[in-house]
Length: 551
Image (cartoon, rainbow, N blue to C red; front, side, top):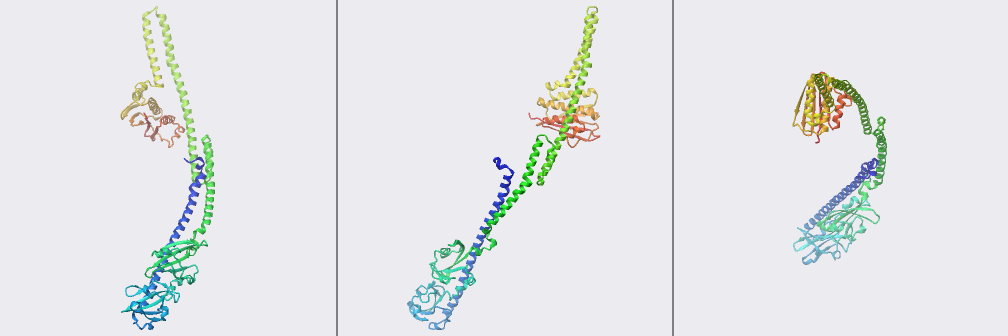
């Protein structure tokens, strides 16, 4: 259960609208940055892989031209080789590595690693090395002719490796370089860095393990760089490319720069939402709450004034106003009903008092006179005494019958002793004896005794329904059906009288003068039951009363 302070609409509006919106914006920003960084890393990796493949292709193409030249040149004809193919010169070696011929001079070939030639299919080559004669990184290519080997020396410049980075020559932010298998730079977009040991640079250790991929690092100036790397395995080289993230990320994609703007926008949206919520939701609801409190204290007109706000709040107010109107009409109906019941009770008291005075009391007075006369005649005429005693017995019996009728009307004795069905049978028999109409009683289901309060209510409902038929329906026949169902008692009273059109709203029964039906409905509601009226003019009326049995 939330504390009371957290259950207010303002806090709930913040918790369920503003806060999720802010979190959503922040999450979108973070996910966008992460996705963009991953996309950029993938792009750098793909670009570097293509550059590595291009480097390998370029080297293969250049080496193929030079291998063909060495293969087609006979020993002793090295001077006829085109000079641009081998910018480091050519040489011919005999068995045991004896230098037989050297161009441009034997001194240029001193210290070159002829012994490191690694045989391939139809040629051999060395790894790149720093040539002591020229100070350039070179490799040696060898092709055997019998017992002798033609060898050519070519530098990275001669292999046109620089063409690989020609697209970045005018871009001072792009850094690209080749490293050998020790991590030493053999070619760099900045020639001054050639020969440096870059084995500790980001990505170099991975490319020396023949791995390709992308990473990043932050330099001493706080700028973040993207690093892509890929191996050139056939030549023992590794390609590394570095670019600043600011160059890879277009301004509109660099969402980190827009984080303050996003926060400001979120704050403005949040403030606007809170203001709108206060104006259109919170304040109208507070006004509606005040009106509802006045309504609860009985001021049924307090809910009639509009409170403004969103349409749903106004619809809620209209619903409450309709309910208040229904309550007002129900109260009016209850006042009419209570007035009618009070008048009926007073009329019934008058009738009982009149009947007691006119019948029972007069009978008792006459009986007293008879007793007095009998006492006077007791000594003179004993035979007359016997006759008068017989007359007094008849008067006593008639008075008893009249008192029993009053008692039965006030409280049916059969109901407590025998139950509901015998009492209803007596009610039907009295109707048939009176000759007012023909009545029948039908029982459905397994009959059983019910709680005394429920049986009394069922009897009074049946009694009131019968009196309604006698007074208003003009019917000749009446059928009373009692249904015992699991959990309920159902009464149906049907007549073939003049009928009427039942009102759509039960509260209108009293306004229409149907006080008897109003009383039946109120008795049913006291037990959680309901009344259904089925009828129309000229077709009789059927009342169905369902009373729950919770015993």
